[in-house]
Image 1 (cartoon, rainbow, N blue to C red):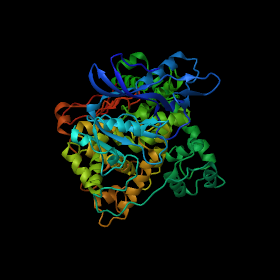
Image 2: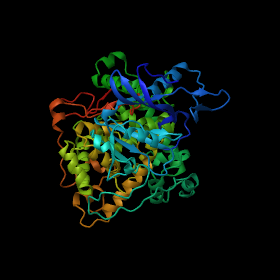
Image 3: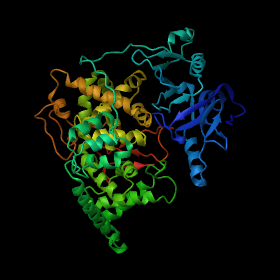
Image 4: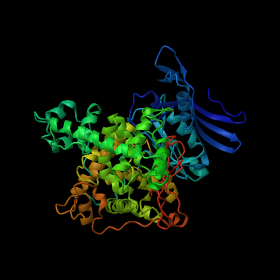
Length: 589
C-alpha cells in the first residue's frame, strides 16, 4: 500500500493508474506498471502536488495475473534470481512522479477511441512525464478537480492539448463545460500552402510465404523492388527477420543463390575469426604500447556494461550476450581501423544481435548498417551537421511558422534532433518498434534521407506542445529527450510517408529538397552510403546555439522518469571545444 507523510492532506486518490512502457499494446508482463495517482496538499514543501507512485501487486499464486485496486494486471514473474527481481523493483520506482502544481504547463490527453484514457503532464521546464493510463476510468473526475485550482484552456491547434494558464481567479469561475474535454474537434491551424497531405495506412508485414515466393528455384530474389515495397509499407514478420535483414544490410547480395550464400557465409565466418584473433592475441606488453587499442577497449567495456541492460537479452550479471556484444565491437575495430569504435555504436548493434543470436551474423549485419551511417561518427561531425542543415531546409519549407518559432528560441540549428540522427532513433522507441522502423529505413525507399521525414513527422506531432507552451531552447531539448518510448511508430511512419507524397505533388519544389529526397533524376547519389553524407546545393551546416558555444554545454535533457535506467545522454561537441580521443559523441551517466 502506498503511504503519504502524516502532514499531507490527500485531496484525491485513484488506483489502477498504469504506466505503459510500450507505446503499442504488449503481451510483455513488465510492460504495464501499476500505481496510484494523488492530488496532495503538502506542508513540507508547502503547495499542491500531483503524484503518481508505484503500487505493490498482491499476487495470486496460482495465476499469471494479479488484482491491483479494481483492475487486473500481470503479476511479477517468479524469478529465482533475487538480484534481477530487486533490479526490476528499483527500475519501477524510478518512474515515480511528483511535482508542484505551479510547475504544470500543459496536459495532453488520449485520442478519442484510443482505449484506456491517459494523461501526459508537461512542466514549464519541458519535463514530460510518461502517460498515466486510467484503466478503470477517472480522467474526467481528475480534470474537474484540477479546474478548481488552475485555469485550463484547450489548444486551438491540437484538440488533445490543454494549456494551464497563469493564475486568474475570474477565469476559474468559467464553466467546466467550456473545456469540451472529451469531445472531438476538427479545428486545425493551416500554416502552409502545400497540397493536402494524403491519408496513408500501414500495410501487412512481409510473410514467410511471400518471401519464399519471391525467389526462383535457386534462391535468387527475383522481385527485389516488390520485396522492398512490402517491407517499406509493412515491415517484416519477426520470424523471418533473421534471414531478410541479411539482404537489407548487404550480408548477402539480392541476386545470390542458396549455394553462393552458403559459400559466402563460410568465408565470412573465416574472415570474422581471423579479425577477432588479431586483437585476442595481442599481449599485455603490446597493449601497453598501443594507445588506440587500449582506449577503444576501455570505451567498449564501459559502453557494453550499460547498453540495454533492462532488456531481457542483456539483463543480469554475468550475461554471456554482453561478452558477445563486446567481442563484436572490438572486432569491428580490426575491420574498420579508420573509424574504430565511437560511443553510440553499441546502441546500433544490440537490436541486431537480439535478432541474429549469432556472433558472426550479427557482426556482418552491423558492419552493413555502419556502412550506411558511418558519417554520423566521423571526427569532423560533417555528416551530422549536414543532416541538421537538411532538417532546417525541410522544416522551413514544410512548416515555416514552426521553423521561425524554433529560430527565435535558439533552436533553429535543430541540435535537439542530434540523438535521433546519431543513433537512428534507437533511444526513442522500444525494441520491437525500433526494429520495425530500421527495416523500413534500410529499404532506402522512397529515398535514403527518409529518416529526415521521420524527424519532421515527430516534430509536426509535437508542434502545438512546443509553441503553445512557449518552450525555449532548454525546455525544447528537455521535452524532446523526455519523449523517448512514447512515440507511436506506426503513426510516425504514416505521417512521414504522407509528408513525402505531399511534397512530391508540390509544384516548384526547391532544388535542394528535390535532391535531398531524390525526386529529381539528376540528383547526386551514392551506392554505398547515405545521401546525408553530401550537402545538396544551397545548404550550409548550422551554427551551434550561443549557450552551447559559450559553455560547451551538453545538448541533452535530464528527463525525469522517461529515460531507461541504463540510458545516457549524447554530447554535442561545440565548435570551440577540443575533441576527445574517443570521438565526438560522448556518453555520460
